[in-house]
Image (cartoon, rainbow, N blue to C red; front, side, top):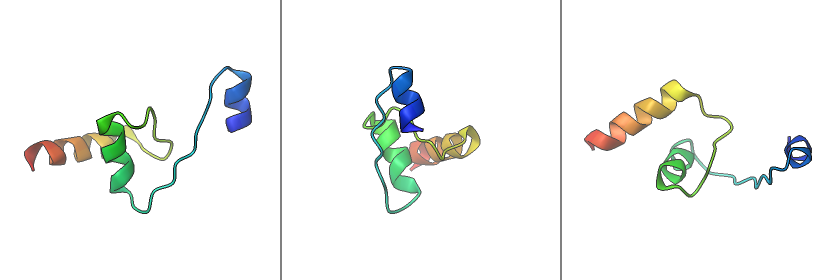
Length: 53
């Protein structure tokens, strides 16, 4: 994936997390631009849960 992205002018940095919640929080804070395992319904549910907490 990184080599394909590089051919298209994209620099990918892989960041590993210990659980499934941390990537969403990092994405919401703007620490990440994308999250490769995420699908939109799960992300939107997490956003809604965080907003009501």
